[in-house]
Length: 310
Length: 142
Image (tube, rainbow over all chains, first blue to last red; front, side, top):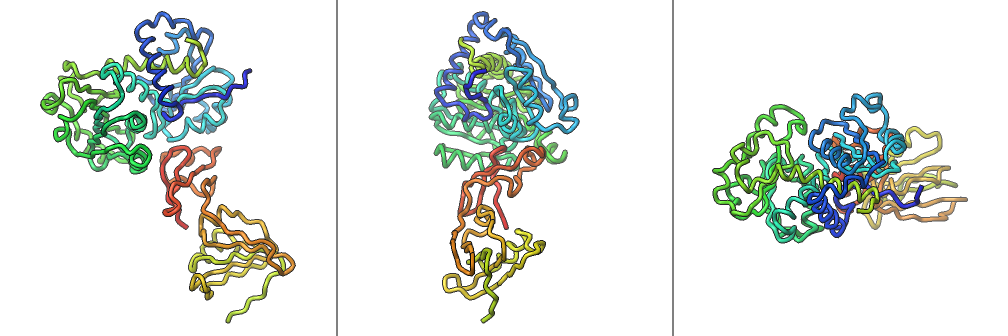
């Protein structure tokens, strides 16, 4: 056993901007020639600890590990794990540390992956914790922006939809603030604005320019990257609030008439109805490519955390 | 002037903001102890105008972080052989473990018994603490 401290990815700040740039570059190489990395994780096991449902994140992690030549084990429902018997996260992760080389955890409670990292002997990746953080989606988003815009600096990035509970937004906006992002535009209903604590952090720590608006149309011409999000049913305490707000922010060709020709439209998926199907034909819609890129950036992350030379 | 016998050995919590004495008395669960305790309220003070004082006989250990959190004006006088042998000024703690819970209903610290809430001070003026797990801000109120 080596004495190197175990490295985790719990929140985007766990990696410096330089390290994120390296991951993005490695992700690009893996995307260009995946066959070169087909066996670099042979003999390694990834544990997928999913305490709540997930399609994209779970499968993209599994695809990433399999494409690196590694193996996977895990659960995708807390009811089929010892958590259903009341086992603490600390105990689960101590045991999993003996079975796998690296683990990804998704949990409905905020801070759960961080708790796991305190007791783990293997790298823990936060695969999404409640409405808090989703750092690997952030890496996916950064790779996508880097490929389509050629830079992560001096862009005007707009976030639209559920900015209160949208963990993908929270992780990405914090990370983009560390780059020299020109301006953020926050488009949401009043009930779903960015949490005050995060807004304060962005203003105090990073001195970014924040513009808050209620409609897409009033700012569409200024946007370089439009990041759409789903208004998530599971984040609401009651059905009535969800029903009232779910259709508030739907993107369609009419709404982007005044948009820049090179604007890109991103979405962490799954989409419900916040982007009309007609938009899929628009060259600026990059969300399916974004989902595809998620596998390659996760491959880069797994090799990095395992200390595999690429 | 009200007179209360001095204590031989123990601690005196002085300079308690007037009105906080009873709350601190209750928080420290001094109504449950079997040693002598005195709570003085609205005592005249040159510095503060009015203040509260708590005298605790025979006990000298006290959580200064806890006191700093509930009232950072407090001075703790340690008494031995009828003399003040140590005077401690409490401070607002910059890190707190387990003394209160995170106000975020979705925070793991409110569900997993294994974990103790862990907070970092972000605003001394407003007593605002950031949760080390979910990062939500909780404002402490006595």
